[in-house]
Image (cartoon, rainbow, N blue to C red; front, side):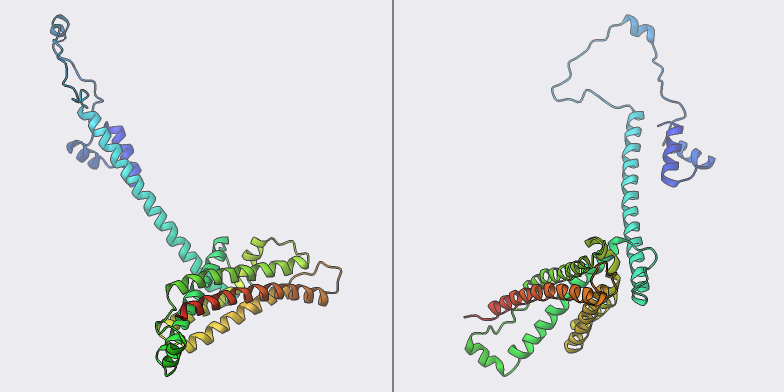
Length: 309
């Protein structure tokens, strides 16, 4: 590697020009060469008159040997590739940390003023919020159901009767229940947003499904904080308080959906009262039917796992 290549490599790694002292140290360490590599061949006259005897190389032997200059160049390229990969990894970590910090700032601003679009909003924040609601709702419900079954069936006088009628003495609420609840809550949230979108479409709103998610997820942020709090209370086995806070969070989510429809612009020729009533009724029917189906499926699965007969 010559001096110019070494300086270019130094600037790429350190983002600055090397000093004369650093150049001299690198030269002394053999990191580059002052001359660019034309080697003088001695005894050219003898080489012209004497024909060298070529011997066949053994089978499998490496007939190409790199010069010291080529070896240094290969080492330089390997180090350069390693540095670039590390820089990319550091950049990915920095970007992730920046997104997390910006998202937390958005959450704190939004919980204070849900109807005011906070600065620095990213569509990713809406889906992150919905994902947090799904995961923590499933976890909180699983923990509360586990504690309820343990107290009401296993650790009570009802346990002898439950064994008699075929109810399992072992707690059936576990990881499988959590996974099932993840799907159930995700479908519930999807149905909630879908029913709200249908209600807005009845009012002839131009908003698309993704627009509804982006615009109105901020109304669910207060409920998100309450659901996370309910989960933490479940973990320390304050299940009754956790249940109350969780129900409060669900109430906020329900009221938010009604608020969205009631404050939407009515583009129907129908009177505003009847138009909003029709939109709310349609949205409510969709929510009720889907919620009933999901609840029925979940209760059936719980009973199947609870009864041993």
